[in-house]
Length: 275
Image (cartoon, rainbow, N blue to C red):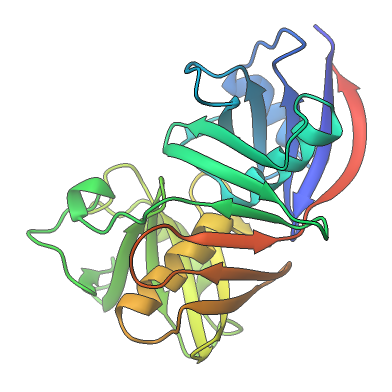
């Protein structure tokens, strides 16, 4: 089976995007893992699959697979690439695109300057909706690490689970050691994406994210949204925040209720065919 694909990225968070509307696609964890290898394959953080919708009120179904072959609920940077892909490949002629995901519905809006805004929906803060094991909802939760250190973390779902830790500086944050430990923490039964958040001021932040099933990436759209939501409910941010990730900057807008909006750039790297 030969498949056409497109390599894209949003702030360095890179993707293999496959059109499952006009071509037949068969995926397996082994195949995805082989394609994701940066030495022997195409190399990417996630594979994005465009499929026909299962409901008449949606334009497409949007599926996301991590580099380890596991399927996940949502990906914000991927959603921006998804929007650009379906327009560039003439799968739709519109600047507003509605897609269904395993984590809920998304609205994708292509701006006049080429950037893409994603309506990420409402954040989920109730522990059972994240999911996170806690007796009741809190702004911050105590979390104990393997060596007995107690951390104060925020827990947020943007269609996928996020743990947000405030740090003095992302440059010195223990992403490589604490990220994989917390990803597998027993209080997150579906594993978790771990965000290390530095508050610069009320309208600016810095973030590094250790993604579930991937490792640290250059950018994470849902992680950026979760971090700003966590910061807003704790009184650290205003309604519009520019958040700098290792690959570039996103604008996150959230007034404290309702839906989160994320705006950022998209780039196409190359087209190819793979067996």
